[in-house]
Length: 160
Image 1: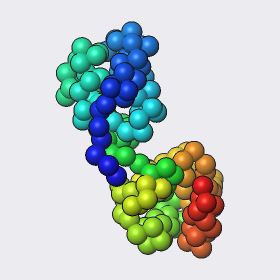
Image 2: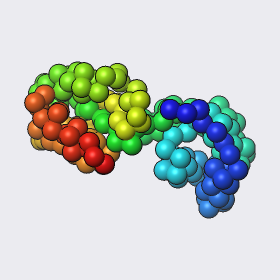
Image 3: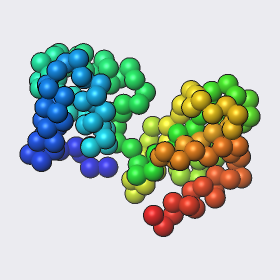
Image 4: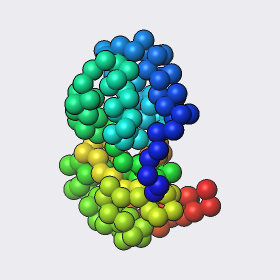
């Protein structure tokens, strides 16, 4: 992945999002969601600009970004893969499914493939225990996953 560059266009998008929430520090989570939706992640330079626009310490913005698992400071792949490791999923073999995704993609947890197509993360619970084990690819839920299905899931995104 290329190094993040806070160019004029990106900077203006961030300013516009902050202004859409009245530059209020009480709206920081909404601002962070909006900015991450626009840019894909929240690197340090972006957090600094948000803190400046919302008149709050950078440490407070960083604390929020690092606390909530939804926010990320690292770029994700076009198709982020999240494997649930909650109790129900773990009992049904999600750890083996995680290992198979890592093996087939050649990356570890928190990493992105060299073509920026896939990244792998883990979740503690997606609230779909009846479908365990569960894998998310973007917003799509794959329930009752098995190691054998990993190849088929990845094939769905091969030509996208």
